[in-house]
Image (cartoon, rainbow, N blue to C red; front, top):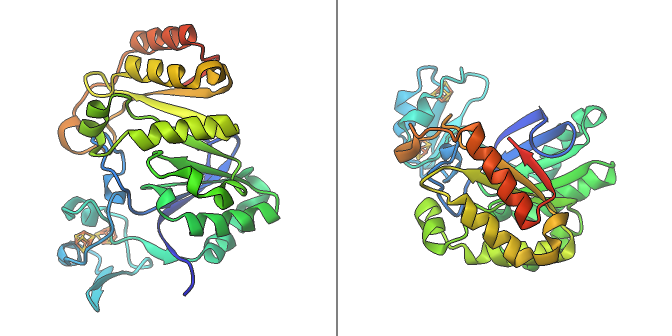
Length: 279
Ligand code: SF4
Ligand code: SF4
């Protein structure tokens, strides 16, 4: 059976998903559930309840064999289906093969440096990634993974062989803080951080600042303690929380101030980070 992954959307030209202009591919489904997720409708796969079918004002959704069928040509992108779904899913996905995605990406090849695959959590589909990246590499396109770090990279050497690097989210360091924020376990994130840094495969470490939720001081200190002398070699991106797209208890949470972010940059510098990006 052909290797397929659920594709939520493709952004042809992105300037925020790695170096240069890149085609960003978002896969559906995640193994954790971050409270501050900007795309909560990407977290789960559709369970076929059918609620959104009745709500669609354009008749773009229908049911067949227990599944929901999305008619892309009829959809008016009103997002009603996203708003009514209680399962953090979307009916607007397509299960596609690496060859099909590469066929789309190749059309943008003269204008992009590479592709970045994100999610959801794209590491849920390592075989798909390996095949897609192999196709991209063959035509000289770069390949980056944007991951929450909870899936063991050491078990996927074949994928790393065709990946330029990993943009690794470190959402929190303390196990209780991480669990409260994501519902998951931080231990594999720490293992991946050590493994990928030792291999020189980290494109960027990403820390989102949400006061009262992410404890960035603890996260920065924890990362620097684990990385040791490798700390200065890792690019660190400190990102202000922004509530766009967020649902639940953080839907109205404030963004940190510029002064707060500047203080965290100074802390990161004291801890040994030398390549720090604010966003
Ligand atoms: S997308 Fe959500 S509301 Fe629509 S059928 Fe799937 S689970 Fe139900
Ligand atoms: S966004 Fe969803 S509800 Fe709106 S037209 Fe498209 S499929 Fe229908």
